[in-house]
Image (cartoon, rainbow, N blue to C red):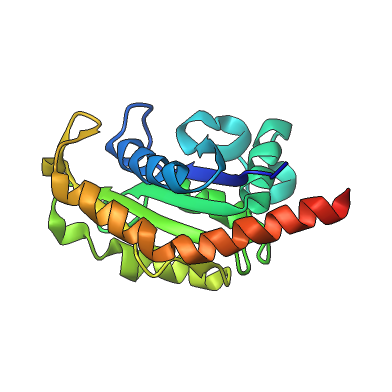
Amino acid sequence: MTRPLTVVIVNGSPTERSKTMGLAGLVTTSLGNKLDIQTSSVDVYRLGSGFTGAITREDVSPDVEEDLRRVETADVLIAATPVYRATYPGMFKHLFDLVDQYALANKPVILVATGGSDRHALVIEHALRPLFGFFQAATAPVGFYANSGDFDGTLVLNNEVYSRIEIGVGDILPQLTALADAAETASVNAL
């Protein structure tokens, strides 16, 4: 029996209904159509005062500690954020301020962002990629961005976005398949 890859979405959106999670959902659906995955999310807007009041990792509440460990132990991380004033929101960054410095080393990270217009699309290259470079994460060479005109509410209407996701996920599929194979081998050896 094979173990599915654990995919954790870090949702940087400040609200429950968000374009960001609509786009991240398309990415996970595409992944799920190609690989056996188990998906969960860490939503920064749900973390509460046990998160926002924390200055150090020792200050977080037990439920926030559990979420941080899920981020650190995921097989694949999807970092999904809206763009606010040309970068990711502070609560999104605060979560990564609390993540262990070496926990994401070599971990596949897929970058997802949404913004009001295409002028914000470079947030993937100029804000997200350097953040995960600090962690020495294995960021996917392709990132996924959609602007508010691509949506009706949280539903993506632009067929080009769907096409970009399919092509992009196809491009990183060999690395993720190798990761899934390694996870399967590790679980068999553990028996």
